[in-house]
Length: 326
Image 1 (cartoon, rainbow, N blue to C red):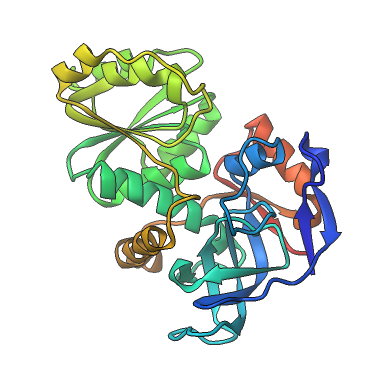
Image 2: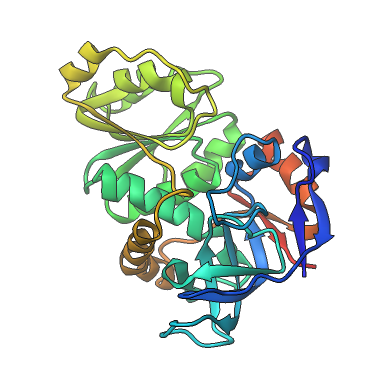
């Protein structure tokens, strides 16, 4: 088969479409013939040499894919060859085939094409596990999403609205904020021109956000605490703004606030399977009913993954960038 390899870390040109050995599904795994994968920020970090796959994972980038089951490994039941699926991965999505633990498989939702289903697993599992399983967003509460026009952001908006929450977003242009509004966002903040703390306080009569989903890390730490409501929960899922920040513990105590920081890729198989099962139970009915949909900016041939990485790094996209097998 062919896959995107990274012979040496570097820029987008470091991604090489090359012939590699076929993966073999092990105990409790299936072999998926990939139709499409999706690009995530973690893939860029891996390409740059900063985010290696966990032990035992595929060396190729790609944290989610869609396709058809080509082979069942030992001990697999409940799935059949030919089933159309999408999958959460620890790596290997930038390839024509990938071996997937059965607990990380999901059926393709009704009304979603097989290709566009590749946009779902990583973002849905990230949003559901952080916003709902950890931060426990409830109906009537306010969620602040940084990077509202990203793949994570566009899904977070839809899921929060589906459960009856109010949604605030930050984004860097009017065009991106308009797309967020189309998805249901109530409070729109242009972070290039406005202070999200002040705008959020103004829009919530001084209360702030009950839950904040943050992809920035250190750069926003202090202001995120300022923006929290009493008993608010800050969920950090990214470090685009740095890894070391100063925390005012007094301010956090005054808010009776909580901070969580999670990653998905390196979690044990059992934890990933539990998240995928929760997503199938709670989110898949919303997808099947058409209340939630993947937001896809564009599809790029997988053998031109370098172009897809350039798109993501330029940050002009809204939603997900997909890689389609040639």
